Length: 555
Image (cartoon, rainbow, N blue to C red; front, side, top):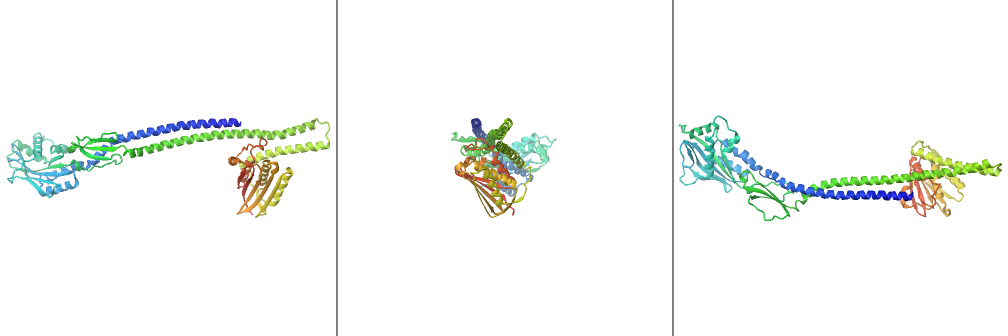
C-alpha cells in the first residue's frame, strides 16, 4: 500500500509539473506576444496621434480665421488708421504667428482712379495704405496716400482681391441672398503665409456696385471698403505636444525638408499644415529608446493581467494536486482504519470463540477452569465494549451530541484513582504526579477521565520496557488549569507533529504495527476542544514526549 501511495504521489507530481511547465511556456509566449503587440500599437499611435497634435497646435489659427477675420466686416468699411491700429494690436497680441498687417483704406466710386481698378463706372482703389507689425511698435507706417505725390506701387494682394471682387459682382444673382460661406470665400484670398480679407458689403451695396459696372448709375456715390492683408509666420505657431511620452521632438519644417538621419534607431512621421501654411509640415521624430517607456506603460497592464491569469491557473493546479494527495491519504487512512478496526474486533472475538468452544466441548470443567474461562470472556468483552464506547464517544463529541457536565472534583483523589487503575493494569508502569495552586476543579469527570486514560495508555504503549514512566503535573495558573503529561518514550518525529491529532493517522514504528485504529490522540483533541481547552505537544525522538493541556478553571 505504501508503494502504491508513493507511486500515486509521483504520478500526481509529474502531471502537475508537466502542466505547470506547459503553462509557463504559454505564459512566456503570451508575454512575448503582448510586448510585440504593445510595440506595434505604440508605433501605430505614433503615426495616428500626429493629427491630434496638429489640431491642438492650429486651434489659434482656426480661431483667428473663423472669428477674428470676420470682425473686419463689422466696421462696414469705416476703419481709419487709429481704429485699424487698435484692431491689429489685439491681433498681434492674441496671435503671435501674425507677423505683419497691411491695411488698405479703400473706396468704391464712379470716379476713375489711377491706382486701382476701373470697370465701366465702377472704380475701386486705396485712399491710404498703412503697415503694422512687430517691428512697428505702436504707430503705423503709412505706405501710400492718394494725396501724396510719392510713388508707391499698390501690391498684388490688393489687385488680386479687387479682381476677385469684380468677378463676383459680375456673376452676382441679385434675386437671391448669398450665404455667408460664399461671401467669405469671395472676399478673401488665402496664399502661402498670407491671408487678404475685404470687408463684406451689404447686399444693397453689391447691387449698386453691379449697376456701376454696367454704367447704369448716373449718381456719384462713394462707398468705403477696408482690406487687410495678414502676413503669417509658420515658425511662430505654438506646437502643442499632446503626447509628450510619444513624441520626443516636434518641429515645423518646409515640405521639402529631408532628414539626414534615416537609421532604424528613430521613428519619424509628418503631417502638412493647412491653409496659408500648406508649404510647411509638422515633423515628428522620436528615438526608439525614448518611446520604450510608452510601450512599457501599455504593456505592463497586459502583462499583469496575463500574470494574474497564470497565477490563478497555477493555484488551481496546486489545489488539484493537494486534493488528489489528500484524497489518496484519506483513502489510505480509511483503509488502515477499517483494517485495524477489523483486527481490533477480530482478536477478542477469536479469543471469545476459542473459550466458548473449549467450554462447549469439555465434558466437565474444574473450578479453576471455570474461573479462567470466565475471566477471559470478561476481559475480552470489556475490550470490545471499550472499543465500541470509544468510537461512539468520538462520534458524539465530534457532532456535539452530548452535553458537558460540570461537577466539582478533588484533583488529588482523581489523580490517585487514575494512577491506581493503570498500576493494576500495568504493574511495571512507573506513574507519578504533583499538584500545586488548587485542590478542587469544576469539570466533566467522565470526559477528563477518558482524556487521562488515553494519554496514559499512549505513554505506556510507546515507551521501551526500561523507560515506562509517566509524570503528571497539575497547576492552576491565571484562571487556567494546566496539565502536563511527561513520558520517556520513543518520541515523535518533528515531521509528524502536525499530523498526530488527525483522525486515522498512525506513525509507522515497531510499537504501532497492529492494534491501533489511529483515533486515540484525535479523540483527545476532540475532548479538549469540547471542554473549551487547548492541547499542544513537544517531543524529541528517543527522549520522550510532553503533552500540555490547558482547561478553564472555575473555583
